[in-house]
Length: 248
Ligand code: NAP
Image (cartoon, rainbow, N blue to C red; front, top):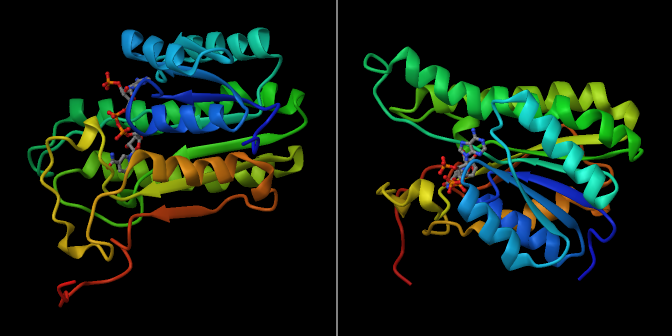
């Protein structure tokens, strides 16, 4: 019950979906948690559900000033920062020939530049804590292409590269940086998507809590020798091609 006891975590996009599950899981294992999001009402509710040791702050990840406020809130309220989960993300759809520059700029700003902003903002506080763990939520769309989401896929490949480069720069400061690559997870983001689960080895969508379990490992000292790595959690979606499924 205390795998991240005495640690302070900041989770972006923590109002709902995977981010909320991560916040709840870390809090349940002893961490103090700051939830950042642009959905103020839902974020406040999630923090209240967690009770003491949890705080909501308005954090638009595209805004460096919001980042400074959020990191300051973690340090002032809970005494420092040890864990950053860059989870906030958006998706938009169109075939590449119809995909607009506006769509491209929006998804890159949140998913990729937002992650860059977060790493930059957290470094001084993580160094002050003599190390820490940064977990960047990418996607299996950061491992291979999918139709109609060129901007999203580019942003998630970018997060994967940013993670590896930052891990090299921050290793000497004992700051670990890893990326997590979920497959289809049942959240508000995927509520309207009809996903074909026949190509998934486990034959089903994942749950936010299953991603949270992996993030918890990467946030805790159990992963003390793990950095610059990418972790796929997709029920076997990217493992290969399913050609024949036996009824069970
Ligand atoms: P979600 O349910 O839509 O939650 C994402 C949260 O981030 C929402 O509260 C969203 O608010 C917020 N957000 C959006 N823009 C933001 C910004 N500029 N600053 C701060 N917060 C912002 O999505 P999810 O499914 O939990 O996804 C979480 C992460 O996992 C994302 O990075 C996503 O790309 C990644 N992922 C998800 C899946 C999946 O199948 N669900 C698969 C692979 C990767 P709004 O509602 O206002 O946008």
